[in-house]
Length: 276
Image 1 (tube, rainbow, N blue to C red):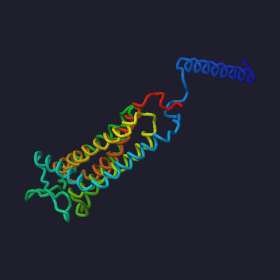
Image 2 (tube, rainbow, N blue to C red):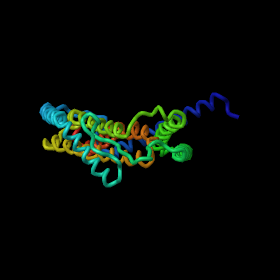
Image 3 (cartoon, helix red, strand yellow):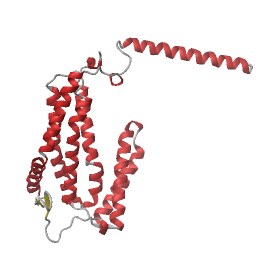
Image 4 (cartoon, helix red, strand yellow):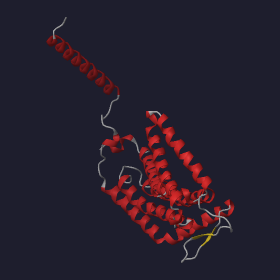
C-alpha cells in the first residue's frame, strides 16, 4: 500500500503533466491561426481626426434635419397608419392638433377591454410558455430568459386587469403616439451614435453618409408599420397586451434593432480596419 506522501507526489506529477500537455495543445492551436491573438473587437483603431470631423459633420446635419422635419415626419407616419388602418379595418381616424395625431372611433357596442375568455386564454398560454422553458436546453438559455421575461410582463398585466381594470386609463391612440415618439427619439440618437462608433473607422467617405442615412430610412419605414401591428393586436386581442407591447416592443425593440443594424454594418468593415 502506497504511503500518503508518495500518492501526493504522484498526483502533483500528474497535474504537472496535464498542464504541460494543455499548454502544448494551446500553442499548437495558436500557431494554426496566424495574426494578432486578440479578437478584433478587443483591439482599438487609431483615431483619425479627418474621419471623425467628417462623421460629426454628417451627424449634426442629420440631427438638424430630424429636428426641423419632426412635424412632417409625424404627419407622414400618421398617413401610413391611416392607409393600412383603412385596409385592415382598424377604426383609426385623423386627429387635430388638440386631440393628437390619431383618434380611435370604434363601433357602438364594441370594446377593447379584455373579456374573461381572453384573460383566461392568455393566462393559460403564459403558464404553458413559462413551463416550456424548463425543458429547453442550455444552448437555448438566451431564448429561455427572453420568453420568461415576456411571460412575467404579461402575467403582471393579467393580474392588473383581473382585479383593477377600471384603473387602466391609457388609450390606443395615446399608445400609438408613444410608440411614434419613442421611434423618433431613437432616430435622433442614431446619427451621433454611428458617427462616434462607426464613422471613425477607415471606411469610404461616402459610407459615412450613406449608411447612417440608410439606417434612418429603415427606422422611418419601420416605426409606423410597427405601430400598425400594435393597433391590430390591440384591436383583436384587447388592451390586455398594451403593457407587453409598450415595454418589450416599444423603445426597447427600437434599440435592439439599432444594435442589430450597427453590428451588421461593423461586421462589413474589413478585418484590417482596426490595424494601424
